[in-house]
Length: 165
Image (cartoon, rainbow, N blue to C red; front, side, top):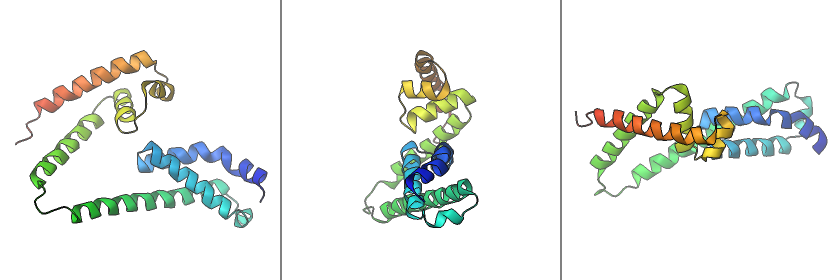
């Protein structure tokens, strides 16, 4: 398979691949890396791909496997960090931070859909206001207002929760 045939077959599904990767990895950079690695693997196997009848499905399965490998490696990194912690590390404060993160995630997941999407794009994916505006179709000025109101609402709801209980 030459480059032109490869591009014709696989470039139209690149957006779909990114969406699948983003859903699995929940991180823009990791999703982009996974899609790029998928294209590299597909290119390396281009001679074998001529026998494949559903190239889109093959590309998605390849991407899924790459995403699972990424998730496994991140889990291993986290496990290795815990194993290498010095014994005098303050585990109590670390547990408190983790508990607070869990609470904040739950609060974010209980937000209305538009606010939830905007705050996740801003906080977890580090999108700029302009990038969020492009992704959501909402004006950049409205994005800033919604982010401010959402942060204020999250802070109020968080402070109402008794974490020590």
